[in-house]
Image (tube, rainbow, N blue to C red; front, side, top):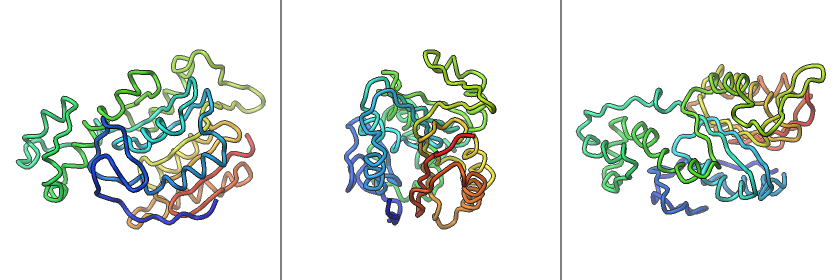
Length: 267
């Protein structure tokens, strides 16, 4: 794949963007994903995953569900496909509900309603530091609900490390119809076809997320890391460390603003 340059986060229409129009129920006040869609379309066509049956995807870092919903609507369209998405938004997104700018909107947002009046005041509310927290915490529930209700999406409201421990110890409860543990030498938990890593941006956390994700990735499966070249973020050394210590087990498909890798060898 060719290197794709990132154009920066957008603050467009709540549902539409240059590259994609989300379903009518979807609400999000900013867009830091759809600029990646042309590269993702190419990637999923190359890997021939689009429209396959029985796919399992994992997303670390749900935010407002832009990547989640796009994957569900455009890639995970076959039978028995599911995405597991993880974000500790209840714990990490503290909200000052006494903020006079957002107080009138909080109850509606809690009830799954998106308040269009937020948009004209967006910059002021952004400056107040609470809008990210409110929209992530309450809006994602509305955005994912149709897919959760139809068992196409499972949302884990927790940090990524406890999620992997839950997956490790309770994997048969999560997906009892599939045998995922193979004991041939070292145990290998081959569970996911694709993993998107966009959670904590600390060096230590992204390294931990990458190592654990790789354990649960199927042979031939793929991982995309977000924000590798994002200014002001310091997690790229964690990605580089992961790539170095796993270099004989993976192929780097693309390395630009995002990093695309494929698992070519198991442990």
